[in-house]
Length: 250
Image (cartoon, helix red, strand yellow):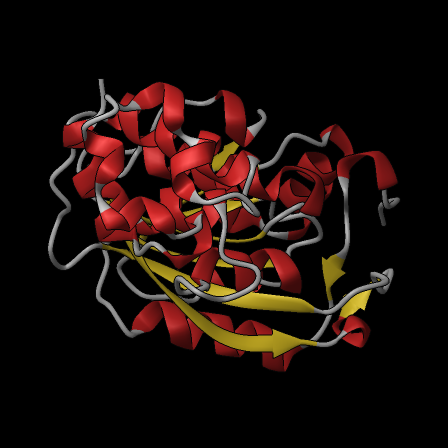
């Protein structure tokens, strides 16, 4: 069989019903190319390989899991990428879908990699630690709405789909998990630049208890800061309001 490595944040799915729900969430939108991130022991992979007419790839960093998967699922021959997801280029030309039970220790980095690839990623369905999943999907005004909420929702519409209990995994994690689906925004946001948005959002939430005027003062001219919008706190601004502010930055 194989061993579980805490250093890689490994918690492997063992519940077939959860796997089927993830596949169902994927199939809500058509796709021809699919990348699974971190197949691990192959619980989800087994169902993905059954999807007809799909160009499938899987990326796995763990040597032992790559060997196990190759022996257990002969259909994976030529489809396994033995590298870290964070280090690879897009594995397909054209649009593709991403799915995975993501390692908790790099799950946010995985999201930002998907944001980098947004011109090609048509859907992502992913399992995260529940609080991370909630944060990614949180609307403005929510107590967990923050940097990752805004920077993800600036480019993707995010839906929280369902909870997954600890018992669905081996070994069981100490926390609940949650599955989300990300799709490119139906209406793309106008931005002065991606760099300005990232700077603004990080500075604003770095001092989230302060009014926006005090938190982001260095980024705006004094005349701009007189706007009543700056009386609010970062968590009270919508994603579109942050995007509009990028055009007013110094």
